[in-house]
Length: 146
Image (cartoon, rainbow, N blue to C red):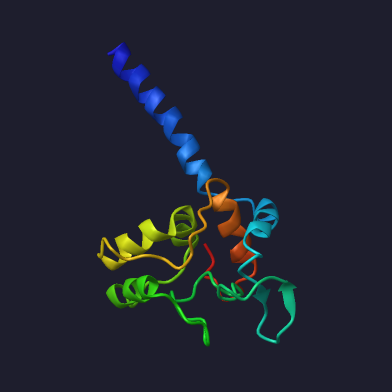
C-alpha cells in the first residue's frame, strides 16, 4: 500500500513540470522571436511593423487562431500545403505552433500523412517553444481566448 502511494505521488510530481511547460511567458517569447526575424516579420493589418524582419517566411501577425497556410501572397511549400489538404480545418494554436517550431518537417509529415514531406522551414527551436507561442498569441488579435 505504501509503495502505491509513493508511486502515485512520484507520478503526480513528475507530471507537474510537463503541464507547466505548456504555459509560455510572452515576454520571454518576444525575446525568443529574435531568432525568427531573419525570415519572419510581424506587420499588422494596417502595414505597421510590430517587429521588422525578413520576408522569406510568412508574416506572423494574427497567426494564432488562423488556418494553416493562409497568409495571402505567400508561397507555401508542398509539405505545408499537403498538411493543409489532409487537415482543411486545422488552425494554428499555441500547441500546434509549439509542435511545428520544435521540428517543422516532423510536424508536416505527421499532419500530411506523408513520410517524405518536407517543410520549407528548416530552423528548429530546441527550447522556449511555449514562450514563443505565447508571444505570437499576443500579436494575434483574433486568437480565441483560452
